[in-house]
Length: 146
Image (tube, rainbow, N blue to C red; front, top):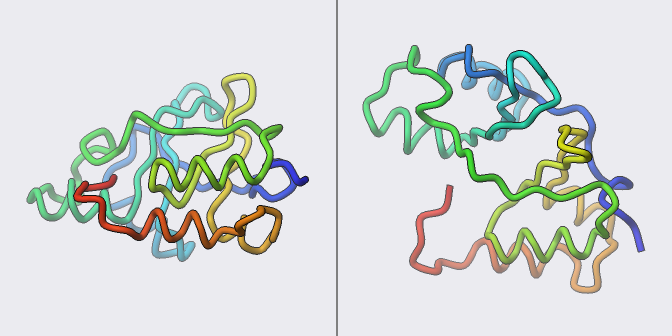
């Protein structure tokens, strides 16, 4: 069975608390992504949060925060993470259980990558493929997900 390490991307786009909402939006547009990790400005390997395109809309624009508002105002701090040694099926189960599409990969407290639902489906390594996770994530459970 494949591990997270075998499927994850090590090219993570990051911002720090010194950045603002506009800079995150530009980075997402320039890189055609919807997820940016927030790292400590003094230790770029220390993960402290994440911002999704949905966070920008719900916590930023819909809350009438301007593009100059700080990252802290829109980021999620309570992140679910995996280690590179975990198996891919376990990562899919975590995504399904937490209804998320992306997992930061952390080793010894340091950000080493990110694994996405797409990575899992391309890896074709789980017993129920990424389809189960996608179904769980896509179902409306009466919750607002960040």
